[in-house]
Amino acid sequence: MENIYRPKVLEIIDIIEETPDIKTFRLGADISYRPGQFGLYSVFSEGEATFCIASSPTKKGYIECTVKRIGRVTDALHNLDLGDKIGFRGPYGNSFPIELFKGKNLLFIGGGIGLAPLRSLLLYCLDKREDFSEITLLYGARSVSDLVYKKEINEWKEKINVFLTVDPGGETPDWKEKIGFVPKVLEELSPKREDTFVITCGPPIMIKFVCSSLEKLGFSDHKIITTLEMKMKCGIGKCGRCNIGKTYLCKDGPVFSLKEIKNMPDEF
Image 1 (cartoon, rainbow, N blue to C red):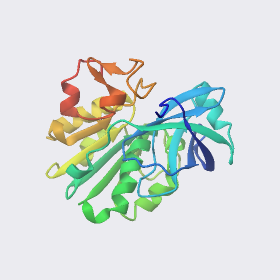
Image 2: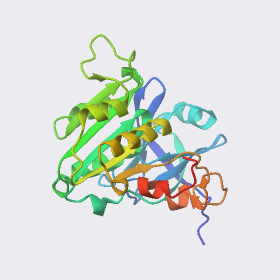
Image 3: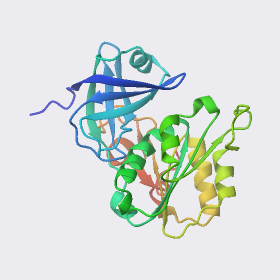
């Protein structure tokens, strides 16, 4: 019987410095997964932490995770180099309902490092472009230096609608994109709601206000999809750290519609 606590050992084959405190790690691996799933990444002798898989399953031979330096495990990850090895358990959790999205418009709304789980789905949709209608990305961060995937975003602009924004005061003298909080910019853009699914991820406070703005714009709760990765630890529903009422985010999620979230206790 497979030991579910025994991690696969993966080699770091590329490292991209996204911001002063965020890195993307590419790990050599032959792992099947779906956009929206996550894994547990471990640095031996330091500990284990949960992150989404940020790459697309359409790309074979590797997975990617994007990590913000915020504590012991993430500090240890940031200190690793090419050729170093880490542990990986997973993939775990459900995934974005891709079959529902086919033939529909997709509006991605991300904040800060919350673009990472959206990136997995966005890259998948770009590789399966004929399966989807209009695709739009609204992405914001506190400042220009906090925006992740800058090089890729410039490439995405040639294929989809992209709107970038930074919080007031976070702009640089040469910033030519929008200035303002994501929910405010969303309401200004007033995207069409017909045949459109919204997929959003970011800080919890951003998600809450984005959902409120979407409701003002007339979007139905079942067409607003988010991923709740907060509090997850063991990944398999054993530690009880991530439950909201009877729902375990790691086992039943992390992907939920706003309609499903509204049926949970008010802890979100």
